[in-house]
Image 1 (tube, protein in one colour):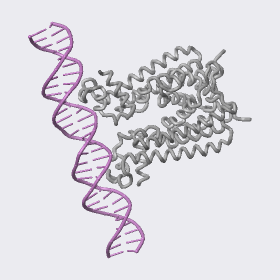
Image 2 (cartoon, each protein chain N blue to C red):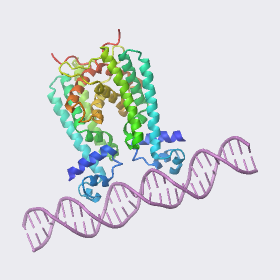
Image 3 (cartoon, chains in turn orange, blue, red, yellow):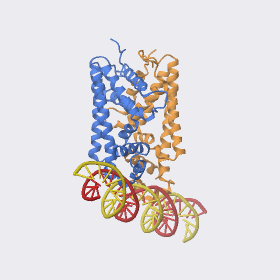
Image 4 (tube, each protein chain N blue to C red):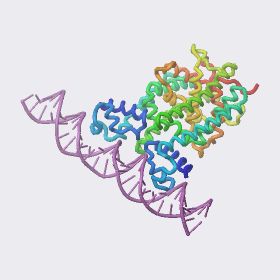
Length: 199
Length: 199
DNA sequence: TCACCATATGAACGTTCATTGACCTGTCAT
DNA sequence: ATGACAGGTCAATGAACGTTCATATGGTGA
């Protein structure tokens, strides 16, 4: 039932947002009454925290795995990272969006935990970009402009792309999550000016 | 005072979300009491609607202008569109984020208006992408994969990039809004596989 | 000077909120 | 059979919510 509460709450937070979702709505969706939630969680906030924690742990683990699978070539690493992140945010779009938008409603200490997790994810991408630049595999300088695009800006551009795919992706659409992940990996490689993947 | 209410409400909706922002908080930020809001707007919802309407009208106008400035070459058009959209969402990040996230709390008819406006923006990008593909200026096919990335997917990727820049951009940071817009225009061109801009 | 109008106030409305605590009811090990 | 216990119900709490309304006030044109 704890798990059931988490899933129904995530769905409702996704549809209406945390403040607009009452404890009564959550528990009604589970077929019980409001007071019963407090046998499993100390507060409505704790339910949100549990959802966010699970989502962040899972996505960080998936990214680490993707990084390993990419071997030591930065372009392959980037492709794997983009694939994993896009997959996560399309296959688990409800938790993904909630994690992205509702952390503001947590108490400061727990909100900080979420921000730290987001920062760690960004660092993973930044390191891969730095390695690819050092190896001459990526090109981020506009020939017309004096300064190249900073690595953190490029990382954020790619992250926003992947993360927000969950907002519009629909599993019943013409493109499957896996196809989309492949297409995004390709687009990200073009975005950083990576050459052809052979060699 | 009507304008003041709009601006303070936008800031509060941005910080806490629409449902968590009470009429009393909005009016207190303007130095008046709750009842006074109803001399200017019929409801809290109408305040949100007014904010969203203003933002969408302005952003659509800016995009149309950018499209004209791009002339008849799809790559220049795309660069201008990305520049305008990034500028809008960084310079007016508060309204931009509110428009992107809080429309769910509007009544169905007005929510539909917002979705229609978002769809029109996406269509502008899609048309430019289609023209660039037809002219052979963009390359969206992965040589390893059978199918090319669909135009609507690419449009969404670029839109998410630009729109969500407003989430992390800080005016006091090292990169100015205008620099960021230029960098994003460059990244978007690389993303669609556009060749060098000369010729 | 006066009437008017826009706009502010502050109290009150009914509703809903998250949370609590007393109570009930099955299940299971002893 | 019995006792413990996990997990449910139900009623009640005070606070906060959006909104209404009668009333006050200050500036403006006649």
